[in-house]
Image (cartoon, rainbow, N blue to C red; front, side, top):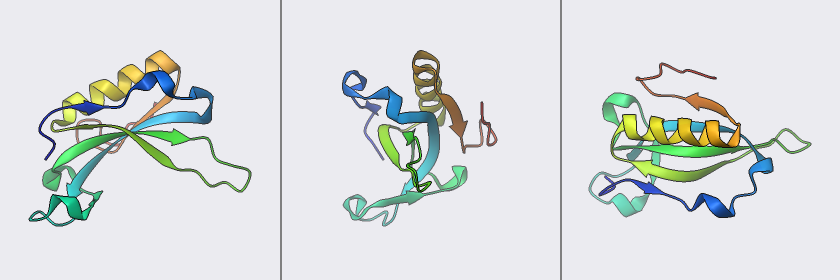
Length: 104
């Protein structure tokens, strides 16, 4: 689990390339070796929550997620994501128990 909240420096982001902020529960793929990667999780087995920027799809409809923060608590991730969404006029999407799949 992350030792504390981590958030990227948002001052260098080209905001026009993104259309939404998302929150996802995450877990370590191998709990005995956290360096071995992470994967999406359910709230009840999440090790932490990540905040992502969702890129505007390209002409082929492909997109990507860029992680901008990891938080040990769900409420901290949701608060950070909502602040970013409001400040940068992006949609907010969360796939967590607190928000029950809310899409603003």
